[in-house]
Image 1 (tube, helix red, strand yellow):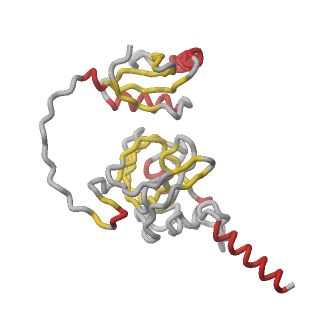
Image 2: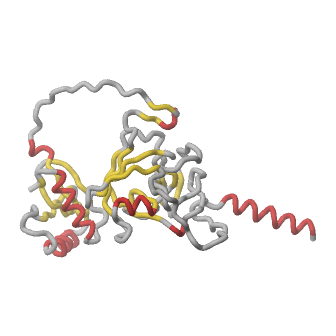
Image 3: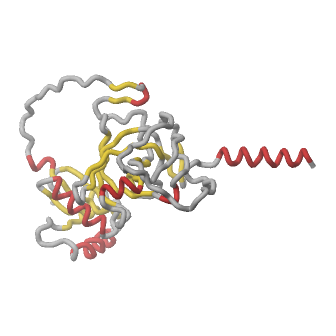
Length: 275
């Protein structure tokens, strides 16, 4: 009997050690009340530097970056809060929903990033110390405090730009910050405007009728100030596009409108004018 009891205890210990930290069942707190610190300004500290090996979640592989230099992406941000408050993050810290932190699928941990809400122009600095979000079309998962600072806790998601603060050759794997080098300004010949037009691509479809159906649904949501919707046949794939736009800012506003209508995979592309 004693031998069986010890084997059972060891097995439970091994299983609990192998569980993913963010999604493991948290220990029961002494109180159900969650108290915010006196200031939301803390970026947090602690944990270990972590890049990680390729990993798989829900059948999809993720490949952590060796460096966070020059990282800049536009995408959808979500947020996570009380459900994960007090649990361990992927790099061993304790998640605090009132600290300015974030989860990202591939950036080294920790990384300091500037997150800008493209809908209202607000920007904040956050510290990436966790992995996620593992939802299609999501770029970053901010803490409750960070999402509140950017003004989208009620909406749940926002369209953001994520940029590393140490884009000037800060390689976390080498554990030092490179000394900035002087920047030489080189005058480039002007580029013909029509060679780099901005388009919003709503989606790509194998069937022409499916592409036309999307055009019909979206047409009512675009006013006369928007460039027309077009179906472009490239390599027997029918791409629904809006454009061209003279400015990326105009394309970004239209992209936000289209994504809010349910087309989360829409993106901005650049290329020659399409007839």
